[in-house]
Amino acid sequence: MGMTESRRYSSEIISIDSNSLASYVYSKNEIKLNKLEKSDKDAFFISYLQTRDVISTVIDISRNIPDSDLKDAIEIKVYDELALDSSIAYMISYLETESKDAKNRSFNVFLIDHAIITSKFDPIRDKVRYIDYITTAPFLLKSLYHKNFIDPDGTHCFVYFQKSDAFLAIYKNGEYLYSKSLHYSLKEINEKFCELMGERVDEEDFYKLLTNEGLRTSNNHYQQSLMQLFGEIFLYISDVLVFTKRTYNIDVIDKIYLGSEVGSLSGIEEYSKSYLGLESFEFNFSIAINSKEWYIDQIHILMMLSAQSYIENPNDTLNFSLYKRPPSLKNRPAGKMLAVVAGSILIGLAYPAYQFAYHSVLSIKAVKQTSDYNEVFKKTSVIRNELALLKAEKEKIDALVASETSKFEFRKKLLNEIYSKKISYPMKALMLLEIFKLSNKNTCKVESIEFKNNTLNFYIRNNSEKKITEFIKDLTNLKKYNINTEKIIQDDELKVYTSKISIGLFNEQ
Image 1 (tube, rainbow, N blue to C red):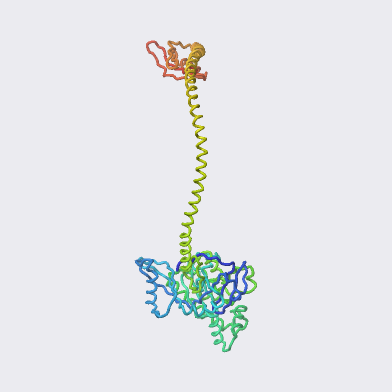
Image 2: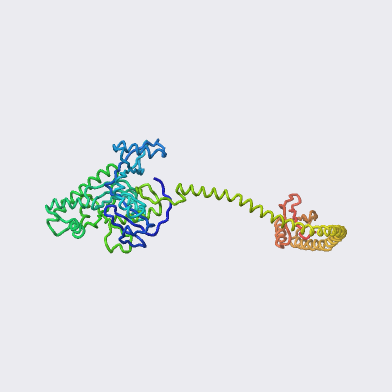
C-alpha cells in the first residue's frame, strides 16, 4: 500500500471502538464523549481491530525477487505456508524486518479476513460516511514514539488487557517487532476468578475491585484467588517473552508498560518484578487538558495520536480501512476525464477566438502605425536636410581646428624646451653643488662626472673605505635623490678606494 494523497480535515479527531461503538472527539486539546450520528463529516475518523482478529507470521523471500513482484510473491508464500482457504479474501500487509541472511529478506506479514472487517465496521459505516484509518491495536503504539511520549532507544514490551481481548507487543528502537493476542482478556480473567471463588462476581464490580483495591485487596479470600490467577497470567506472559527473545535474538527487555481498558490494575507491578524481573511502567498517556476528569481507555488515546501522525505523514501501509474517503474529483478517473473534455472544448473554442481577436488587434495596430509612419517620415525629411547643412559646416570647422591644432602643438613644444632650459639646468647645478659639499665634508675626491639617461654618475675616490661609506650615507640621508651604488673597489697599487654612485634626476623633462 502506498502513500495516500494529501487531504484537508477539520480540527476534530474522532476515535471509535468497533466493539462497543463508544466514541470520543479530540479537539482544541480536549477530549469529550461523542455521538457518531452528530459527528462533523469533515473530522478524521479512526478505529482499530483487536489483535485476535489478525493473522500474523514471519516469512522469508529471496533477495533475487524484484520489488515489483514482491507483493505477489509474499501473498503466494503466505497462502502456501499457512494453508489458507483460497476462497476467503484477505487484506494482506507487510513490513520488512532486519535480516542477516544474505540470500533472503524477512517480512512481518499481517492478514485480516474481509468478512471480519465488514462485520465489525459496517455498523459504524451506517452512522458515519467514512472511516479514514483502521489498524490493529499493536500498531497504534507506534504513535507514542512518533509523538515523543517514549524515547525510542531500547526494547520495550507493552501488555494491555481489554474486556474482550488482551495483547502483548514488542517494539525495538521505536519500530514494531512482534505482537500476540493473549488468552487473558478482562472478561476471561473475570470468568476464571469466578471459577476460583465458586461464586458469581458481577463483571463491573470485578473491574472496580481490580482498579480500586486490586491485588492488595483486604478481602483475604479474594486476594488468594487473585494471586493464583495473576500468577498464572504472568507465568504465561513470561513464556511468551522467552519465546520472543529467543526467536528475535533479544538480549534484554528494557521496559515493560502494563495497563488495561478499565484503568491501572493496582498491585500488578509486583507481579512484573516477581515473574518477569522487570520494573513496570504505567500504560497511561495524557494528551488533553481535561484528561484527569475521567479515565479514558488508552486505546482511544493511541488512536488520537495515530490520527495526528497519519495527518502529518499519510501512509496507508498498515491502514486496513475499506471505507476511505474518495479522492478529490480532480484525482478521480471521472474527474480527470471531465478535465480532459473541458480542456479540449476550451482549446477548440480558444483557437478561432484567438485568431479573430489577433486579426482585429493587428488591423488596429496597422492603421495606427501607418499614420505614425507618415508623420515620422515628414519629420525625418526635415531632419535629413538639416543634417546635410550641419555636415558641411562641420567640415569647415574641422579644417580650422586642424590648422589651429598644428600651431598650438608647435608653440607647446617650444615652451617646453624653454622651460627645460630655464628650470632643469639650475636644478642640476644646485644638485652638483650640494654633492660637492658632501664630498668635501668626507674628504672624497670626485674623479669624474657623466650624465646619461637622466642619471648623474659620480666616480669618487678616497684613501679610506669608511669615508666613501659615510659620503654615501650622507647623500642617502638627504632623501632627495634616487641613489644606486656599486661596490667599493680597492686599488692595491695606488692604495685608494673607488666607487661609482648613480643619482637619478626626477625633474628632468
